[in-house]
Structure formats: C-alpha cells, structure tokens
Amino acid sequence: MELIDGNQIAAAIIAELKTEVAGLTGRKPCIALVRVGDDPASVSYVKKKEKTAAEIGIEGRIHLPPVDITQEDLFALIDRLNADPGVDGILVQSPLPKHIDELAVFRRVAPEKDVDGFNTLNLGKVAQEDDTGFVACTPAGIMELLARSGTDLKGKHVVVLGRSLIVGKPVALLALQKKAGANGTVTICHSGTTNLPSFTRQADVLIAAIGRAEFVTADMVKPGAVVIDVGINRLPDPAKKSGYRLVGDVHFASVAPLCSKITPVPGGVGPMTVAMLMQNTVKAHRLNPRR
Amino acid sequence: MELIDGNQIAAAIIAELKTEVAGLTGRKPCIALVRVGDDPASVSYVKKKEKTAAEIGIEGRIHLPPVDITQEDLFALIDRLNADPGVDGILVQSPLPKHIDELAVFRRVAPEKDVDGFNTLNLGKVAQEDDTGFVACTPAGIMELLARSGTDLKGKHVVVLGRSLIVGKPVALLALQKKAGANGTVTICHSGTTNLPSFTRQADVLIAAIGRAEFVTADMVKPGAVVIDVGINRLPDPAKKSGYRLVGDVHFASVAPLCSKITPVPGGVGPMTVAMLMQNTVKAHRLNPRR
Image (cartoon, rainbow over all chains, first blue to last red):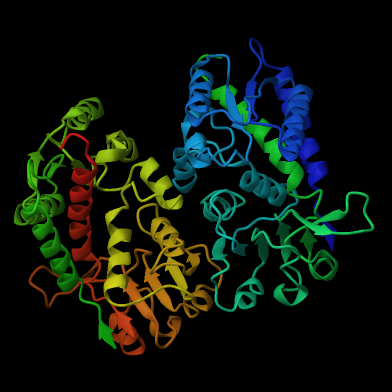
C-alpha cells in the first residue's frame, strides 16, 4: 500500500508556481480574499491562503466585511473587485452567514476571476471540456493527486461516492474527459443508491465524498483499488487536547491495507485545495488581458 | 415488452403546449429559426420545426443566410435576434458549414434565448439543478419519455452509453438530480470503456447514445431493463426505395423481447426533440420580461 502524500504534492505545485511567478515581468498575480465575519475555521482558512499566496509571490488583498453585511453590500464589494483591473482572482470564503444566498454570491464573481470555480459558467466549461475556465479547487486537486501519483484513469472504473456540486459532479465530469490521464468509466453513487457496496466494490478508483465519518469500510472496497478520501469529519476523541480528531469518509485503518494507493486524512486532498486555488489565480493572471 | 411511443408522447406534449399558448394574452411566443445553406436534412428539420410551431401557435421567424455567410455576419444576425424583444427563442440549425465554429455560434446565442440548450451557462445550470435554464432537447426528451412511460429512476442504475456534450453528459446529470423521477445511480460508459457489456448488463435503465448502428446486442442487456435508444443511423437496404433504412444504436429485433420497455427507431426519441424545443420556447416566452 502506498500513501498518496497530499502535503508533498501540494508543496511541489506551490514550488512550481513560485518559480513561474518569479519569472513574470510586470505586475504580479493578485487574489482578493473576502471573509465575512469571524468564523474561526474561516479565519484559519483565509490565513492559510494568504500565507501561501505570499510564499508564491501572489499579492493577497484581504477584505473583511462584518458578519451583518447585507447581501447588497457584499454584491457591491464583489462588483468593485470584478471591475478592478489589478485583481486577477476573487475568493469569497465559505460558509457565509445565513442571511446571504451563497450560490448567488458565487455567481456574482465574474467568471474570469472565479478562481474558486463555483460560477455556473465555469462548471459548464468543465462539462464542455473547455480549458479556458476554472475548475473548482477540490476536484482539481483530486485530479492532480491522481496524476502525480501515477494513476491513469484510462480504461478504469471510477466510482464517485457523493453527487455534490462542488466535488462529486465536477470530479465525475473531469474523470470522464477525453484527455490524457482521464477517459475513465464513471459511476456516481449517493445516499439514494440501492446496494451501495455493490458499486463501490467495483471501483478501480474510489472517490469518497459523501460527508460521513468513516463511511467506507473494508467490505466496500476492491483489493488493489486506489482510494481518494475527500471527507473531513470531526469525531469526538477525549484523548486529544482539542477533544476531537479528524477522520475522512473512509475507515482508514481497515481500508488502507487493501488499497494499492490511498490518501490520508488529514494530509491528502485537504492541502491540495489551497495549491489549486493558487494555480487558478496564476492562470487568471495569465489570461487577464489587463495584466 | 412495452413500446415507448415517442410519436404519441410528443403529440401529447404538443397538444398541452397548444392549450397553454391559446390561453396566453398578449404577444404569442416566437422562435427564430436560422438555417445556413440548403443541406437537405436541415431543410427538412427546419420545416418540421416551423410546422410544429405554427400548430402550437408559436410564431416562427425563418432566417436563411447563404451557405457562404461569414462567421462575423452570422454572429451579427444572432446579436440582432438576441436584442430583438419580440424573439423569445433562437435555434441555429446544426450542422453548420465547415468554415464556421459551431460551438462559438451556439455560445453566441443569449442564454435566456438558448432554447436548444447548448450554451455553456445552460449546461452549467443543469449541473447545478437550476431550473431557470434550458435543457438541451434530446436529453430533456429522454427524461420526458421516461417520466411519461412511468419509469421512476429513484434507486435505479442508469447506464448511459456515450459521453457527448449534447446527449450523454446532460442526460447523466439529469438522471442524477435530486428531483422527483430522477435520483438515479448513474454510470457513463463510452468507446474507451473496458469490458463495456459488463456495465450495460447492470443497467436497470440503459440509454444508448454511442452513434453506432445496432451496437447494443441482446447479450449486453439485462432482462427486464428499460432501453432508450438515442441513435439514428442509416443502414444500406436495397429493399427500400431510398436505398437505406433507419436503425438505432440498439439491435432492436434481438433486444426488444428482453426489455420491460424500449423506444423504437424511428418513433422514439426523435419526435421528442421538436416537442422539447417548443416547450423550451414557451418557457423562454414565460420568462421573457419583455413579452
């Protein structure tokens, strides 16, 4: 069994981006990071993104509107960032307060600055295999993990567990593309699937993104499978100082021995999302006619 | 075995639309039909669409630019139709001459008038389960055939054969939606799939859209399956006056006896596409703020 090391692969991508940005003449890439309110997880995520941007040489502009900002005012902020020629990418940190329509906010970001890849047009481009768009960071990160760990999906059966808009569907569309490394046969299962283990057991490559702690057990995995665990769940653990431990959607201890390759949680898909956000930002800068 | 009669179902939809349009006050729905050149199949398709529109009470405006129109001039025509408040829907008949970038033309049509559903934004809306967009006519027609023949996809394994942008991918996304009638578990197979029959044989519902005459044979189908045949292929047949006969992607004679339900070719999916185009046009009119 080989562990797919997301920290190492993310670090390699960040190093490549740093070299690329160092070689740029003129204005450096710039990402606007918008965080509404002070949700502790959001504070930590945005800090991490800011730090990684700085490491690469990407300018990070932080916007911290208060938690009670109206949707109208948040739209106005996004509109200003959309119009700002010095901003290449815009990230609005999720989750947003309940009084704001998150999907509407994501759609407000101009498609050419949508480095999070949540805009409807960019999702359509994934389906159309149009490389001018932006792929959402988690599915893009999964594809990079597979590629850089030497897993070619051609002729393989890829089973995606979960049909979410930000992971399941886009990663299924990516695995299906007529592109080197892709060309998989793809099955998408979900909570409504009858006899789910009969599907997951067929997977040459299993992508677990169902959002349930340790849901995938050994009896659901074919020996020799490649397993990508997208889940990040907290389980109470009195032995930890924090009172909990992080686990994936896969029961790692029993599944890992069966696999040819598997991602750990933490340290698998997680670190990839920030790296892909930075890759998208550098791409947005490259495509920006006003750079 | 029950035959799913596409002619009958399409006629029912057209009758419903006729009643709906008859009840409208004010301007009637209007579709612009653009046919470049005189390709015989296109002439016949556009005539059929014009006739069906008239039957429903939809105004059809025919535009027949010459086969040597430049892409620029075709764009200018589409831009005029996009801006025309009296036009609800725009259909540009495919195929276009080789010197024109077909995908660019489809994308030029304003999303809110894209009754063919080929615009990137409308495909993204299918993925996002956003009903304000337009679903491409063939996949929309397949879903109507299933619904109106009493086939609920919930808990079923839907196997889509073919990953095209206009059939395979959108129908897979539709079958997967969290919506009454959908909620299927979906597998997408294609020409690069290893051991294809092992997948098609699992299908409770098999949607064949691979574009190869009589490709699906009896050994590839599970007894009791529902089979939707999207293919329209010409096979040479000296017994016919035309010199050919139309067949689907399914070997009907051997497969039909196995099925619980199956669509014939012709008379299955084919007639549905025009009905769905009309349904999209009436929807575009309903959503048009300037009607």
